[in-house]
Length: 163
Image 1: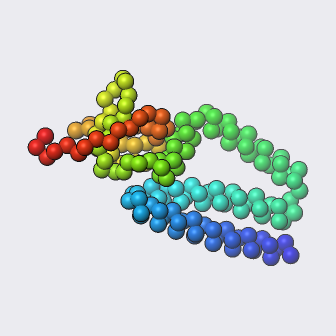
Image 2: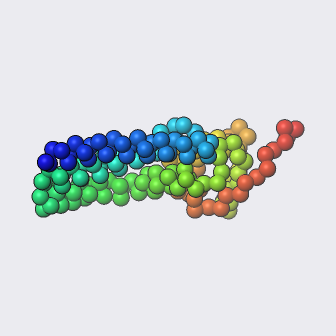
Image 3: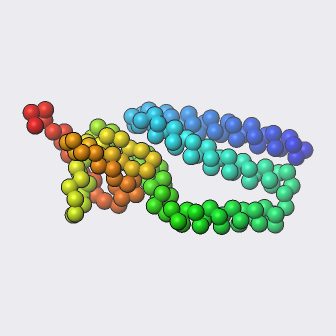
């Protein structure tokens, strides 16, 4: 009986993975998101689904909760220390998800990031997993995703070709 449940879980995992991937891909196409950004998001969500499958398989196959708790707390301790040491990386990845679903600007838009210290304005060249690249004339500005969500961003009119 356990193996049948395990098989059903794996079948559900495969189905859920495909549905999530198709949903994100269609959403990305509707919003004209670059394909590599969609792939990043699908991969990250597949990792999360895989972890959920692993946890469910442990439960179905009869791993005791105490053993599972020891394993999970050990993994969380190691991962927690690693992520705390690299907090900015985690916040940029999280911001990438928010930018994917809610950021009102797209590649090719001209924007100005309101920053009192620097002039950060230009055309959005690329929105990657960790940063946004803004072309300002001949310069390329790499701006972290977590910061672009914290600052005001103003959409500017595209410069005329005569400039």
